[in-house]
Length: 336
Image 1 (cartoon, rainbow, N blue to C red):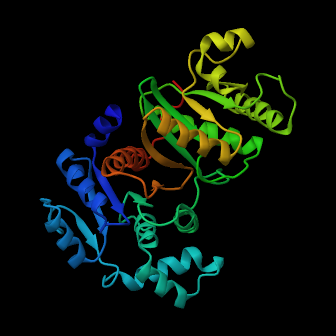
Image 2: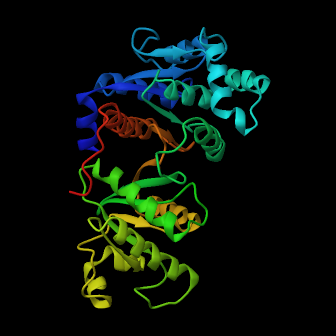
Image 3: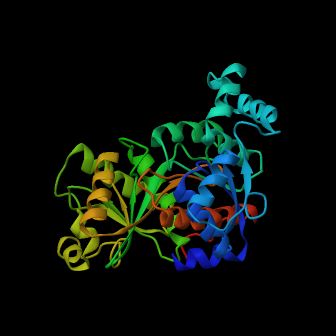
């Protein structure tokens, strides 16, 4: 995380936290300010936020250290409703429904703040179901140009290094085309951690040892990525130990296009990705970072209820660096 924190401090941006009343968000906010990572914006009721800051012994004040959006009484309420109708009106959101949602759903408020340019990045998901947050982010924030859907990239920091797994949250059974897209998007994010992307398309099959629908899908995804991004170091389909062991890979395929250990594992389904992530996190006592949402038009990340204050801090740094790149209107130099 050191390169991410160092870069975030060079140009702090505005990050809005949907669950601004949560203890973990408040504790993370204090450290964000101490580290000069971002200008925090919290969504929450002023009386509740103030009482909890006092209860937890924190040294931050609304208005002075961070901005606060009161969902019950904000002068921008009418314009927020109008903005919501404009982006979601063709998806069944009526003006009456919009008025209710903007009063009661903090994720919608945070997403609207980002799309309106009042915040540069958003974090949500500390409370509630992931898919509920995803639905609102999808309808309000939208997608990067050319991206078919979101995906979730999870980072696990272990004693053996940093490893990324996708897609752990969003696409149940992605096609080969979607897997190639996820891999290329993941590579961009991994470079932000000052790491060279090394992608393995993971399967039960080792370079053709099985001929199943799943193995053929992973084989085709590998080929599609190579055709579109030959500069990315990637190979597959391969088993998990083959991805992580150079010796094992040389025994199976001596001339693999992947050198060293893979650090990005592209899994065939959401089931495999999520199960692998949860098991590695527990068995290896790994530090999780994320999920990192890849593919939104603006920096927007959906956390999970198990996230800690430190996890929120880490994801703040990730969101800030992403927002910096967007603000400069410069895409990162890919795969160098």
